[in-house]
Length: 137
Image 1 (cartoon, rainbow, N blue to C red):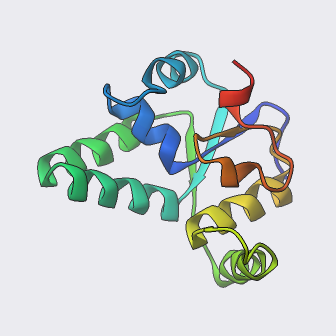
Image 2 (cartoon, rainbow, N blue to C red):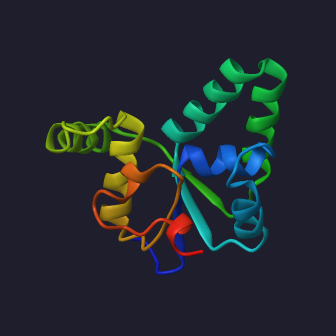
């Protein structure tokens, strides 16, 4: 069960924090300076690594992995068949949206842990009513 001081961290927030050219870099730099307990999934971390690998190179992708490893307030949850199935169900529910499995599992994690805020620039992560940090500026 989640706590009120948890925040779910999506790939887009991690990218914005790590990439100075991102338009949300300053917002997430401030947020990560004094974060609550942060929760994410292995899918998010894999998606972020792949983004840096495709956009830049293996060196930047490894820097991303090192950044994640150094984030002590970040809890990375494994994705079991239960979470995967819950995510797949959300993909069916929101089939009119361009929702990834990573996003759908994130929506499930936020709901099941009762996480009150999502750090993301992806508006899909607000589909179930969890407020996005970008709207709380």
